[in-house]
Amino acid sequence: MRLSIKMYLIIFISASVILYQYHLSNAWLISQNSQEFHVLNPKTNEKLRNVSLFNITSSISNSTRPTTPCFQELEDVLPPLYVITPTYRRPEQLAELTRLSHTLMLVKNVFWIVVEDATSKTPLVGELLKKTGLKYEHLIAPMPEQYRKKKKGPKPRGVSNRNRGLQWIRQNAKTGVLYFADDDNTYDLQLFAEIRYTKRVSMFPVGLITKLGVSSPIVRNGRFSGFYDGWVAGRKFPVDMAGFAVSVEFLLKRPKALMPFKPGFEEDGFLKSLEPFEPQDIELLASNCTKILVWHTQTKKNEPSQPLDFAKYNNTNLVMLKQILV
Ligand code: UDP
Ligand code: MN
Image (cartoon, rainbow, N blue to C red; front, side, top):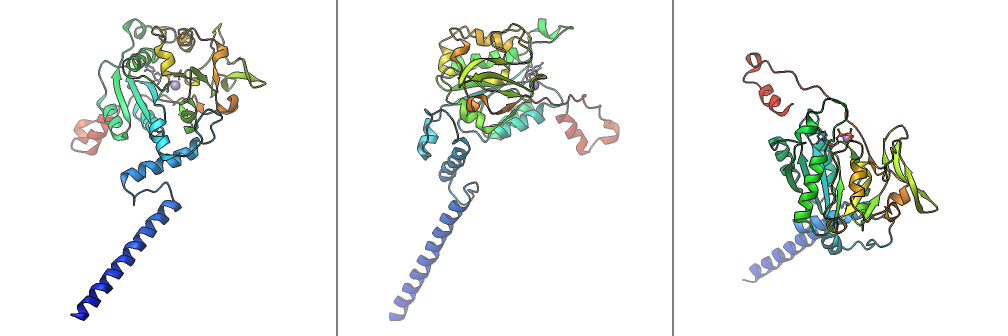
């Protein structure tokens, strides 16, 4: 009888020691690597992800932004970011959307509004969106026939898509910030951290624009003093589509704001339609426009793939691959 009590005691102490060591090893893993959360439950994972993202966003210049890395504050108080992406079916489409989706997957509280210039949704785009785990809306808005048929000169690319995105925001959003993110540009995560606190309209430099290499507000003695852009063309707002963000509340107070089908003047037309709004009202981001947080990259155009010789390759993987290609 005495022996068995001793045995129970030994088993109990051993189990306690093992459990305590397991607890210690988890705590060590957390402190060593906040990017690797495999050992933790989903709630803790989420909190840690916030902390690592806070490290990315902590150098925001505006003093009104939160500065304490509090878990709950980051989760609940972050204003939503509505990213409107126009896209259309072409050989590069899935590659562009894959790249952009991986950027957005690193951004907290983002809502991706993907609008295809098409008469029906591309199923492969739908699958891609689902896979990201992001909050998203998959919409279509074809370019009106009169512009599509145009043989000469530039077309208003992505305008019907962006206007559809604006319509969705008017119907579904109340607060937060909207940003037009073309599918082929390159975005620094810091950009999303900064535009999130836009009160009216914020602006920042865009790299790889015209021969000047950049399009940006000019800042003199810390204040806005004009625009630097290789193609001014009498525009009141000579800026790139990627160079500004707009507060949702600000937009909702301007029910007529829309993007015109006017190639080259889409940004200018939209920003003018936000009146009352003047260049002096712009909020300057990217450390007073001294940094480039977005690049107007352009992917090389690819020819559509050649038809597959089905007689030769029937019953092979190539049949399935061909279904992915344009
Ligand atoms: N786009 C579109 N329909 C078109 C051409 C372009 O929806 O017929 C989209 C495209 O996917 C991109 C945006 O509109 O997100 C701007 O187009 P593009 O990148 O070709 O313009 P660029 O950057 O060369 O001015
Ligand atoms: Mn582009």
